[in-house]
Amino acid sequence: MSRGRTAHRRLRRTAAAAVAALTLFGLGAAPAVADTGTAAPHLQSRYVAMPDGVRLAVDVYLPNGTEPGAELPTVLVTQRYWRARVLAGQSGGTSGEAEAWNAKGYAYVVADLRGTGASFGTLTSELGADLVADSGPLSDWIAAQPWSNGRVGTTGVSYGGDTAMLATALGNHHITAAAPISYDFDPYEDLVRPGGLLIEPRLAPYALLLRILDQAGGTTCETSAQTRQLCAQVGLTGLTPRPVDGPDGPALMAAARAEHANNANLVDMAQQGVHRDYRNGPQSWTVGSVGEQTDAVEDGAVPVLTRAGWLDAGTANGVLSQFSGLSNTQDDWIGPWNHGAGWLADPFRPARPLTPAEHEQNDQRVVDFFDRYVRDGARPDGRRQVHYYTFNEDVWRTTTRWPVPGTRTRPFRLGAGNTLTEGRTGSGPAGSDLLSLDPTAGTGPLDRWNTNLSGSKVSYPDRAAVDGKLLSYTTAPLTEPARVTGNGRVTLDVTGLAGSANGALHVYLEDVTPDGRATYLTEGQLALAERAVADSDDNPDWRRLRTPRSYAATDATPFPQGRAQRVVIDLQPVSVLFRAGDRIRLTVAAANPDSFQLLPADGRAQYRIGYGGHGGESGSVLELPLVQR
Image (cartoon, rainbow, N blue to C red; front, side, top):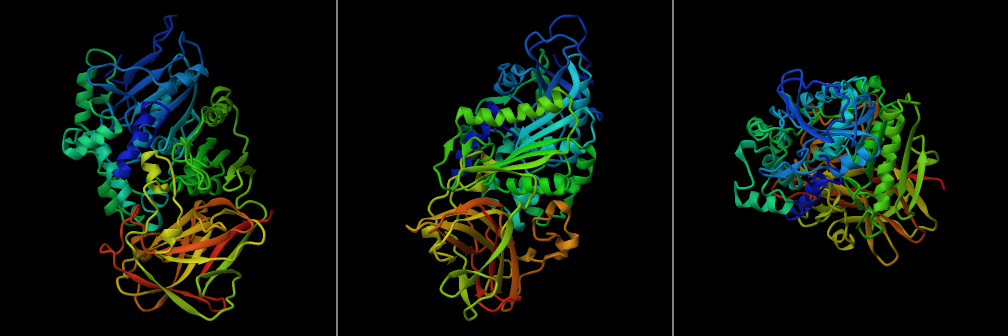
């Protein structure tokens, strides 16, 4: 799911509108350019053959005047959404992203992934093993070129970030740094099925776009009124991938695209892969998960710089999992950004595009990182740090430990009268509140789960009216500021009533100002069939910040009715300052129709949420990581 500030980025960014209503050729292994003493072409489009014979369409951008022996560092991007788009019958222009890297003295190589764009092959699985493995031979090919210094830095945004990071597990010694941006550390938990729940309303339009791009099943912009509308909205009408150079380029591209007709269907996998241990031939959730390849990533010891937004699906959770679970040298940034960091995404401030200066600052961090490890060939120094932004304070901090020093988990108990009171032991009588599934109470069209698949801005309206339809528990006004940084957790005492056997729960953390405005901060959700909690010793290092939970088919059971159950729901991480006079609110819902499948499908379920009691297993509690100021 990769974009730059090029035509690729524009493709993904304009796709937001669709999701809201609804980014010289050869036939064998390409030889190195002959050492003729003359400058190489600035742009060359060609095929490079993989070890199994599949030919990938590759664009090579070199700084003007590059001659053999230049010893250039190289940036490698592997692209899911066509490495370049052109009007049918035209050769197309250059890339702004490539020009920027060329200006910094880098070669820039971008390839269509196998089974996509003008590359040959069939995509047997999104983020499949064969697709990721191609970054190894591509890096070997780059290192063999007479202009190369033998070192490659992999990068990309979203899908391209996923493949860039997964390439660090290949053990290829030419890959000396990686900068995956807005990437999905674990696609199952961090994007497609957080808490075991399918992001169904968000996924279908994106999957249709992929089918159009791939011509899968013969799908094109002209297939139906729906595809014509989608292509018009994303600016795809009349465009094709760029053919490789030479008179046979268009014919070769047509032959390559014919092999894409049977590409894997993302929606089919998402719907059938209910559990994390799903496998259907090459399709599985684990093959595309960095978490499942931590040993190989650590063995490769490739230094990593990554960037994610607090409100970009589960990408921030992924960055913290990377930091907690990988010993690699790391420079990690979590800020107020949407997916791809094109927009400011701070719930206390209006959404706006980032300024050129802000873009330049983010881009320069990647350049500086690659200068160290790709241009200069420095050895990784083992330094690991997280830079993070705090909402409602507008402050950046840097830490070498997570949870950050000074963090103390503080409990807030749900109580009678929709109260939220600090302390683990309840002071009032035990009781419960009725929660009914409301199929109208969602998070809006521009929430965190939309931006990951569209690149659109993130904007949450005042939640006060929606909270009135749900169950909310609110503290008294705070007498002093409180800074929350990290992963919160909600434990609910839940009794399932009618329709709850295949149900789900959603929880929202909010800030309520003295005038009553409720500002969304973060959330968690859980398909109740996936509620089983494992032994903490079974939790791998990358999940140490998450509740031990397998999401395996063998651990899934229907939710019992009429008997109280302890349900633990993780909150997505956040850093926020609650100001003195504000109140902390926890809201509980049984559905989020804007972004998630309804469970049960008929939208009818009820629960009782218990409160009170005196510690132990009874009652419901919100636990927040408060940092001592």
